[in-house]
Image 1: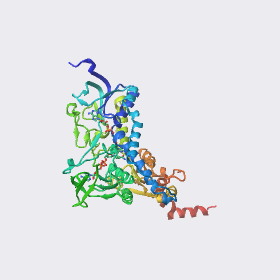
Image 2: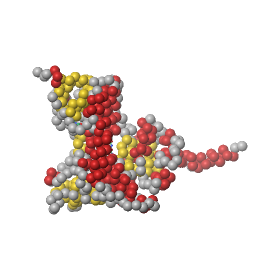
Image 3: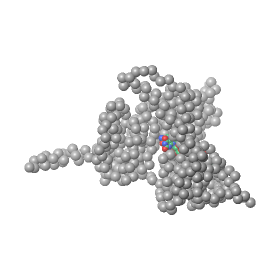
Image 4: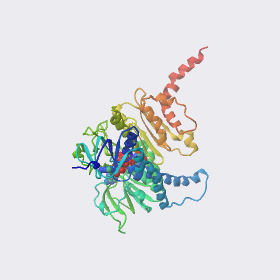
Length: 486
Ligand SMILES: Cc1cc2nc3c(=O)[nH]c(=O)nc-3n(C[C@H](O)[C@H](O)[C@H](O)COP(=O)(O)OP(=O)(O)OC[C@H]3O[C@@H](n4cnc5c(N)ncnc54)[C@H](O)[C@@H]3O)c2cc1C
Ligand SMILES: NC(=O)c1ccc[n+]([C@@H]2O[C@H](COP(=O)([O-])OP(=O)(O)OC[C@H]3O[C@@H](n4cnc5c(N)ncnc54)[C@H](O)[C@@H]3O)[C@@H](O)[C@H]2O)c1
């Protein structure tokens, strides 16, 4: 028989202390629920330790180098900065360490959460084993995240492979980094390493950032090429070997542009997508169904066991969509679960106004569908654009790459917005609000935008919807008529 001290009964038991699990635990405990949180590795999960935070800290350092490279254009002079790669990596570790206390077991215990630092595994539909404790709960929340998916490349096991889990802590600067994968991880890391002085070859089996609008991606591609990143698209890695020197990697490529090519480097970063972490949880015992994309959930994030929710990177796509993996979406999922589990309110995940930002320089940001997706869903749409080259703030800063592109439905409803340019991620929020609140394009066109700001591009793009109405022949006739009146 199980001894009573090993038994733990709670309101909410959360498995995984990444962005998703921490948000549920912090929210629920502060609203008066009893919460158990089980984590087997580092609190903070991928985002803090091997994802968003280290990648954005690396990008910030790389940007500082790129800024200095622009000095001569701006009439400034001075010695180019020397990159001390080890110090750069130490700085990134410090950024992580600075944020870590916020996500730590100590902070969560101080909030009243029972934190168990152990591996979790379901015993049956109602009980979870966590270390030597057996937990029963009114609701379980699975938030076990994702990990890098390595593609089937013959010989890959014979070379040293970096993924996001290892690259940020390697203090050795690559001379030539080969990046496999042209998704967000691949492009962000390729540009940052190039800027810090490494040669970089990016190899990807499809086109660069294949889920984004090609018109916007073209701006990113042009910048990567201008900065000296070698970009090989439609090139799939099929075999890997160490170089003749015995270290590094030689990648043999296939695909319409890659066939017969070989690329070599001293380090290899594989960024070819993610797979959900579900093994070891014994989800079958809990009656939780899983498919290739992840844990199967409905739009309310309920699994096939009505007592168990699943959130964050570990879930598959909802309603047939592809899985989406972002920290802010994990936070949104947490709110959906709290509303249902604590307040018994029905709540569904947002699908229309989910933003995404790729933190290249310039940034690429989007909310709502791409142009192709919007045409497939809505048929007849209007596309409005405004280039940053026509925005005074961008001109004063001599950072004029990119544009705002807005998709508008038949009755003027804003369907989506894509922005590529400096600060695109910050400019996106007004479009998110517009889409969420089902605003029409006139609402954005009518804003007074502070001058000179980059937000002017959003207002000017929206204003394009009214160019014909305001400046066309009918309005000119009307104005002439009115001016003749006494
Ligand atoms: C390089 C990189 C950069 C990124 N940049 C961004 C970005 O800029 N913006 C953005 O929005 N998103 C970004 N992402 C995506 C973001 O990191 C993820 O969407 C987010 O971390 C998902 O959070 P999560 O809580 O679902 O999973 P995780 O952070 O993976 O947390 C899951 C936790 O569960 C624990 N766990 C798993 N199994 C068990 C078990 N059986 N028992 C106990 N504990 C368990 C794990 O140890 C882990 O700590 C990036 C990802 C990468 C790889
Ligand atoms: N800024 C952000 O929000 C941000 C940043 C990084 C990561 N993320 C999240 O992390 C997740 C993972 O990103 P990712 O970039 O690793 O994956 P991804 O799935 O977005 O892209 C992987 C790329 O690898 C390519 N690929 C696959 N197999 C290949 C092969 N054998 N040879 C060459 N290329 C191959 C694919 O064509 C694809 O373009 C994404 O879901 C993303 O949402 C978000």
